[in-house]
Image (cartoon, rainbow, N blue to C red; front, side, top):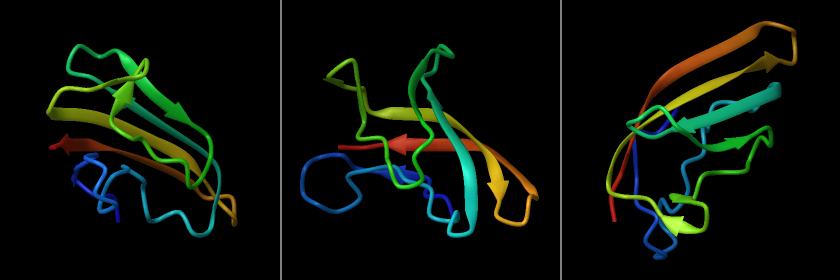
Length: 88
C-alpha cells in the first residue's frame, strides 16, 4: 500500500509520506519529484518519510510524483511509480 494523499500540517495524522508495503524489503530507494521534474526528496531508509518540505521550506499544496525501487528479501526487484497529493 502506498498512500495517495498526505497532510503535513503538524496534527500528528498523515504528516509524512511513507510507503507502507516494504515489510520484507531491502535496498529501498524513494524519490519525490515536483511538477517540473526536480528531485525534492530522496531516501534509502525504509521508514524515513517525506515531511512535505524542500530545502527547509514547506512545499506548495499539489501533486508530486514518486518513484520507489528496491528488492524484497528474497531478491525479487520492486518498482513503483505514482503520485502523491500534498494538502494542508
